Length: 311
Image (cartoon, rainbow, N blue to C red; front, side, top):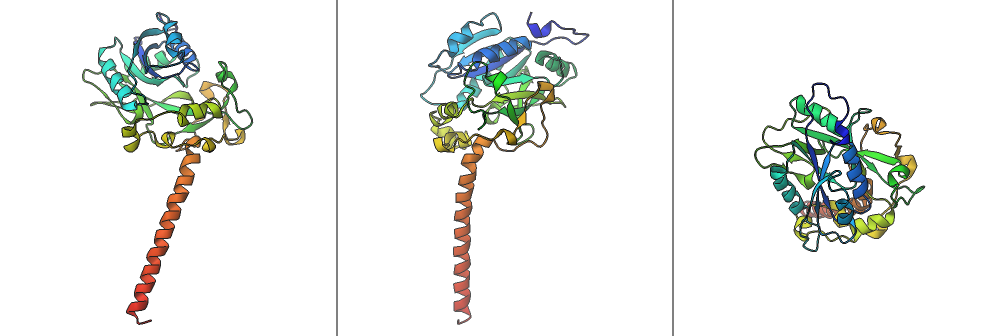
């Protein structure tokens, strides 16, 4: 039995939960992610996108100890999110589980209730008749004061975060097994299916976006994205960021982590801080272009009025 299912159960039936984790060169994160989910009563199914590092070898060490299976998804020399989500939609029809989570390796998902496991929280929602769960995101980043956490103990040393909520629900991607195929919406962040009944309370997710400026350059600047996806608006700033735009925030502008049950979701940001270094200059250029067009339009109107009035 999974560790997260050994506590007091009362009358609530435990459900089998499988987190489907898509990976590509996630050797920094995969072991800690699997171990955490195992402790939380959640099994893992890994879809590896032909990693060139030790991601798959690390995951294989956990087969039978948290990992239910591993498969390879062919990579077409670029990052294709739609193909990964489509594979998870297929797996959600065939894997033996009551609930599924669309999960990334750099995420740590928890209950906000002290002492409650993820499996216990989802089981409570299931017993109450809900079939989907949202997660509030807390983005952890390195800072100017403490810039490098690219080591196995990053969870112990990278302690500053900000709450992120572009829209609500933002991470509605845990769901109860459905007879028909579900749809994983934008970037896999929101599941869609008829009769969806979202739990009234959100669970929490710590997102370790990158561990150092160099890691951010490897993760975003060096990555090749699908042209079709970027042309359709997928990936946003991630596909456009330049090395000089990777700027770390100050600890003064963030919140300090003291415990999962003490994470503060109030006054969340609508945009990721790293993305702002790309977005703000682009908005400035767009606004400058708009201002030039407005000035040109105004000048044309003035000349037109002058001609009409004989001036």
